[in-house]
Image 1: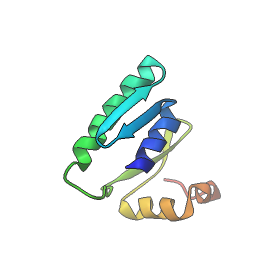
Image 2 (image 1 turned 120 degrees about the vertical axis):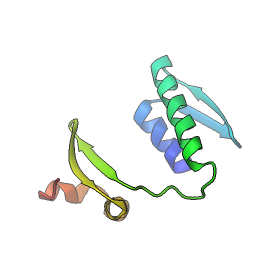
Image 3 (image 1 turned 45 degrees about the vertical axis):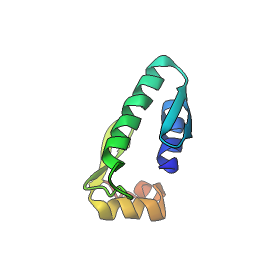
Image 4 (image 1 turned 135 degrees about the horizontal axis):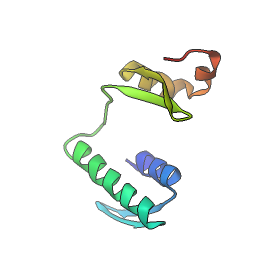
Length: 91
């Protein structure tokens, strides 16, 4: 979950402090509201699970989907990063 929280901080420009299941958010009001909504959603999806596994993933670049796939794509992105997508391998 820490990795997801760090990602939210970077993407939304907020600061998230956590202690157990309690979170304190700071930043621009709109960003804090967005982070709060995503944290609630993340909690609902993980409350009864140890691991989140994707059913389907999309990779976006410049506002458009450049690649879509299932869990295999998510695992490939995790292992190789995103640089291989520049090699012409797109949706």
